[in-house]
Image (cartoon, rainbow, N blue to C red; front, side, top):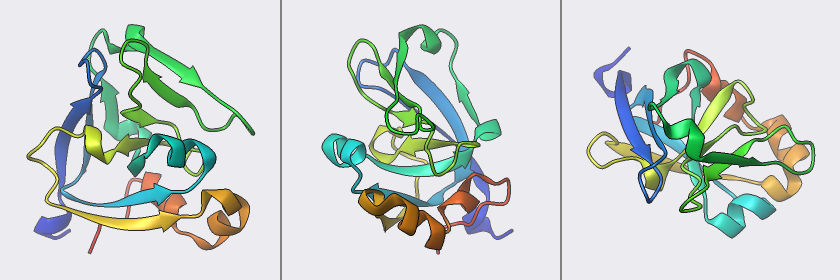
Length: 143
C-alpha cells in the first residue's frame, strides 16, 4: 500500500452539527456525481467506504431520519433538524456508506477524483461500473 492510499480518519457531518461521524478512507478518493432523481435534486457527490469503517458519534442517531423509494435498498439518511444528507447507504453498495464530499471536515481529503454515475439508467450503468468494489475492504484508491 502506497503512502497515497493509506487510510486516514475523516470526520464530518451535517450543517447544524447534530449528526457527526467518522470514516476511515484514503486521503485520495473517487467521488461519484450521480444524475438519479434524488442525487441530482440534492446536488449530492459522494465517495463510498466499507460500513465497518464508518461510525456515528454518540448521540447523532437521535437526529437522523431515513427516506427510501423505488427498490428501498438505498437508505437516504438526513438530519431531522437541518435536512442535510452527510451520508447514506447507497443502492450500489448496501455493504457500504456513501459520504457526501462537501460534508467532510477540511484537512483530510488530499485529492478527489470525480466520476459520473448514470443513475437515470441505473441497471445498465451499474452492470458496467466498478462502484460496488468501493465498499470492499481493499477498495480502489483514486489515482
